[in-house]
Image (cartoon, rainbow over all chains, first blue to last red; front, side, top):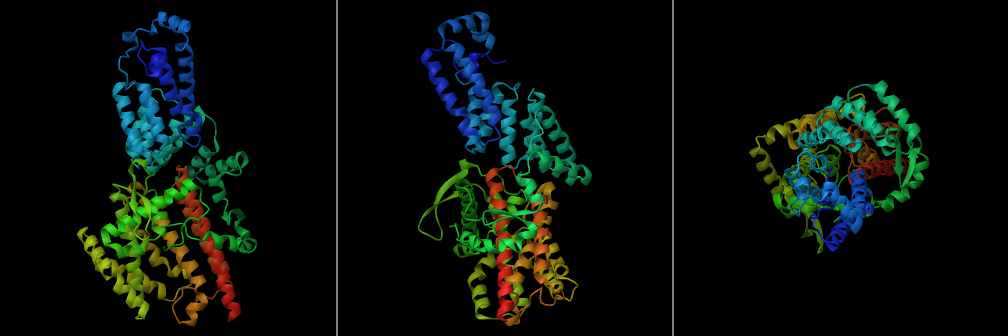
Length: 263
Length: 284
């Protein structure tokens, strides 16, 4: 477990101003609004919790003294002596990821791994950035390292499953997405992914069962809608069988949509 | 700006921006490799293909830079250091136009428009031939394969889709040559083939009456079915389903929105083609 000093990325003798300043920076980096539509949302939430907990203790003189007397204040014990900590690099990597700066994300994570190769976050985030760069073999290797370093979280298994699928290893993808659903919930997107993988290996029976489960759980799932042959015409969902008749009225909307938006 | 698989203008601002980055990057790549005229060959379909086949990685904002637009006096965002991605798409875009030129030659079409087209893009095609021969691909072999596909298209067959078999096969082969999809090459072949079917069918339905008036070949002309529109509709929907289900399950929300919107636009094109067909029938 990292010490509160490591969580905030400050030295053990840091002043209250330094702690406050670092806290502000971290809150800004992990703010939930920045990661709303981001696969790292869960990690950001978890980090935010750790940061708040650390700040609560270290910002109060009495509780800080009490915490330090427990041995955490000793920099040799915490192994922390540099101003750049693993956690602050993870914060920067998370922020870079949310800004879609893949190369920068990889860079921060690699630095974090060189500081501490026993923790999972850096491997997992680097894996996601590599996957976005279509480097799926390297991504799989990173996700596997994340899992073996204790990263037993559904989003890590789910990302591992996606990269395995991109490499054509559909059976492995099925195994991994099932692990994601064991650790976490049977989320609609995981179900859709699982159904597609079953189809890829030719198991139509299981695929149908999973599609049915998804239909019950989230009838508006985008993948499911496309699967159920419901198409969007002029901004409205139209059943395939009605496209030729009812949807013809939408042709005007379609024509206005045609106004080109390109350079 | 050609193509059926293009997103609508109602995309979310971020997806629209990302699509424009891809589109403008391709335009700049065409200009850099083939000269300014090649920018006129810019198409939407190869971009859609590259996303749905998994060839296009998510945009790295670090590589986004501002450049002057080739067509208009404005600044546009493009991706830097992305030759490995955009050059195959640019080569493929030029090849698609070269196929049109071979198609016209096959039909003995020596009209002014065709001659002008060949004249404008002569230099572009020359560069293309040099580039692909440097990769060890013989242009004569490509032309031969394309002519064989055309012969199959023109031969009497039971259904229009039967006629397209040669092109579907040829399209799959081309994607293998131009796009390094690794273990996903089969997915690329399927998507390319299904996209080709959609484009041919919608185009044939839209131009049905005009083609017969101008005595031009149309795959639907000799089709005995009384309900051509239903045949086209079923064919297009089946292909779109294949593209949706066999294509990459996109986790990038912008790419997901772009491809879903492009598929919707194809449905819109189909409706428009049906209207055109029905209108032509009434006029006749």
